[in-house]
Image (cartoon, rainbow, N blue to C red):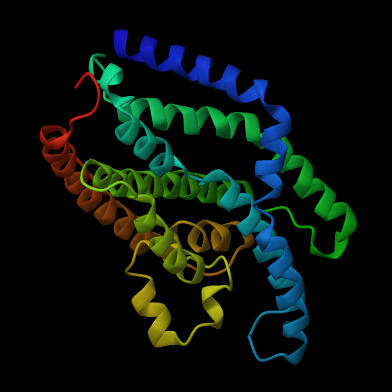
Length: 261
């Protein structure tokens, strides 16, 4: 019970902090509008009929991508790197709580503050483009939301693991920037994986990338997906990354020499 009281207290504090900067939050939401731009490109390309998806399918897919991407934005590596380099991690090490919880709960609280803006933009899109409006069934929506949340935790865990390299290097964010290139093209954000060659798509589905965006977005719009395999791959990658994270954390603490450590 004490642990849950700590969690709820931190959530309320971080939520109040996020709501305090609502104007800034609007710009962060709008900065994730790349899928909307790509939607215009792919809906025009769909007129050739060579991709197996209609312009309406592409429009629905990319608005689903926009929604899912807003749920799994992660920035923990920039915050953790700053804490390590500037020695600000030291006070948190004195608390009876892993510092990772602070970052996870701040991300979670930010999602709660961001959701009203996301819903407003989606409704605006449906108003401007009523032909693409659709209402997913409740089971599909709940499943897609569950998978999107799992995808957020997986991406957070991966980026937090990259952040552990801050104990040995000053710019661990360089790892994330390289990773983001792969994430951009293999997650389904730039193009639906249905337009990839079958063999390439089959290989990609065994990597963690499609489960950040494509998998939940496809479930949301009703594209066929192997749900069982998808969940299995997500849990396998989560277990592998978690073990690596804890190992790097223990090794990193021995190497840490920040102020007050």
